[in-house]
Length: 460
Image (cartoon, rainbow, N blue to C red):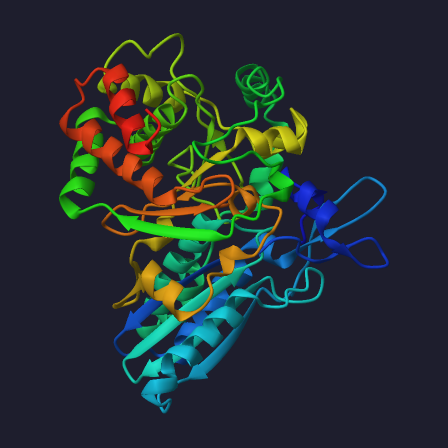
C-alpha cells in the first residue's frame, strides 16, 4: 500500500521554489548541485552483483521513489510504486593510453557530477562505475540534493556493501533483508507531529535568528550579500597525523565530538580574525547533531553553533573551547522546518558566514570484501575543474567557507570567495595553529591567543 503524500520537508520548499517547474507546476530540474563523491575500489568486483545491490538498496529508500509535486496547498512528497531510483553507467578505461588517461578520467568524473536529473520521471541517483584495470575501479555517485545529503550517501553505500556481500554468498533472501532502510517519510511525519520538540527548538533558536545579521568582513576582504558571492576557490591542507590524533584523543578524554572540537578550533581562528569583537555563527552539517539518527533522506538538520554564554573572553583557550562545546552540545537541532519558518532565508544565509561540513562518507566504506576509499582531494582537483566552483543556491556552495574532516586524518578544505577572504592560506594556518594550541597549550590565556593569531593575520 502506497503511503499518503506529505508536505515538503523544510528546505525542500526552498528548493521547489527555485527549481525549474513544468507546465503542471511540478519541479522538473533541481536548483542545486547534487550530493557527489568518488571512491577507489581495489580488488575483484563482481559488477553484476554490485549493480543489483545498488538497485535493491536505492529502491528501498522511500524518498528516492517519491516525487515532489506542486499543488494549491504547496509542494508535497508523493510516494510512487515502481519509480526509478538509480541509473548505473559503466565505463571501461583499461585500454586508454597513459598520456590520455587523466583527461579521460576527469571527463567521466565531471559527467558523473552533472547528471541530467529529471525530478519527475528520471532516477534521482546516478552511479558511474569506471574500470581502470581488472582489479581496480573508480565509483562515482551523485544524488539529487533535494532528497539526500552527504551522510545519506554514506549510509546507502554501507548498506550496498552488506547487500553485495549477501549476493556474493548466494543468499538473495538475506540480500533483500539487508537492503531495507528506515522510512524518511515516516520520520518527516513524526517531526511534524512532535509539537514539544518543535517548541523546544523555537525557544532556543528564535532569539538567535530574530535580529538582522551584521556585515561580517575578514581582514583584507569585503562584504557581499550571499546571493552575489561566487565562492570559486578551493584550498586544501592536511593536519599531520600526530596533530589529528591529538585532537581525537582530546575528544576521547573530554567526551566532546571531533566535529565540535574542530569547530571550537575554527571559532578560535574567527576570534582572532575579528579581534574578539564578533564571532559569526558557524553552520555545522553532516556531523549530524543526533549521532543516533541513521536515516537516508534530506534532513538538513543544521546546528548553527553559538559562542559560550556570557563574556568568556577572559579565560584560557581551554575554557573557551569547553564553553563552546557545552553551549552547542546541548542545543536542539535547528530543524529544517525552522530554518525557513523562523526567519527569511537571507537572514539564515548571512548568519552562516562560516560553514563547517563534516563528511562521514569520506571514511573507507566496506563493499563486501572490498573497501571504497575516497579519492584524495588533490587527485580530484587535478583530474578536473572542481564542480563545487559552480554557483548554486546552497549555503555551503555559495557560502564563504567549507571545512571537512576526511578519512583517518584531518583534511581541511577551505571553499571561499577570494573577494571576501583573500588570504585563504593565512586563515588555514590560523585554524591549524588553533587546533595545536587547543591540544597542547589549552592553558594559554585567550587574549594572548587572539594577540598572537592576529599577528599571523598581519593586522595585529
